[in-house]
Length: 364
Image 1: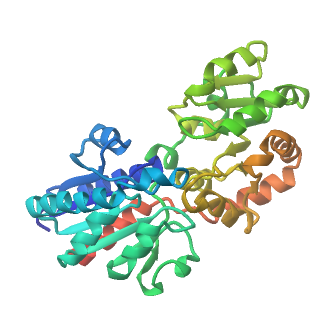
Image 2 (image 1 turned 30 degrees about the horizontal axis):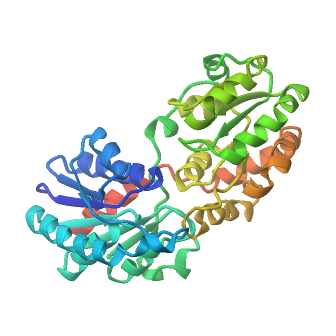
Image 3 (image 1 turned 45 degrees about the horizontal axis):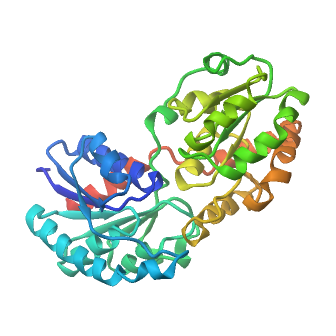
């Protein structure tokens, strides 16, 4: 195949950006002469993360609908019109063979314009509750790649391919053992370990629940790996000063070590976290972020809860209910094993290859 030209549009969160980069990496591996251009929103994290991954990106002057302050939406129609002019220039200059949308409001004008020009478009939907942009674009897309089953209520059934979410290779291919990973965090073997991850910025409700009940970990002979996010790190370090059973950090780079060390996990339920936890097959208690668009984190968690593959505590109940529920789970080995088996059934570890193969087969 001669070198093809791909535009990948979208972003806003890691749940959109990291799958996009993984898809590009696999397309490049399969088609080394391919050329790539990402399109995102100015001021959003993709403008930093995509160049770090080695790809060029163009930024649009666009913003999403602000649900908390309606007055801030006054300029949206003008920004949308402006973004279509920017997209027209980008597509006319780059001349893509295919446009791939990964969600986020910056994907909408790019795919809509491409569809109006007869350029083939593909969509990746990372969540269990589809975003509005993807739903509107799906009818004219070639295929829609979804993370989970049951997405017929959002997309045309004949266009859906259940691909899963592309996950970091280090997590899929890790060969480190449990004891080595515990040593990495300065913790002891033979003691059950809880991993708490609230996303790169941390999770206020989860952090406050741990702060309130930190003594219960020691009282119940448990160890804790606590990723706090930057806003809470100084407070957490002060809290944990006298607890040798706690490893605390604002951000864990080698997440494969943390997953391997853990017996039970506390986590938000963003698309990437869910996909990673399915692959590592860990019993997990989800605390969905309550302000996610379309409440998609709750939908992600509920999908697993309905299959007895996870537990869920509402954000507003985390302060009182979270740590007691986690401690109860650590004592129930049978329930842990059931959850491990059920969550593993939902894992797909070659999503990037499924997506890239489908796109390249279409181009052939």
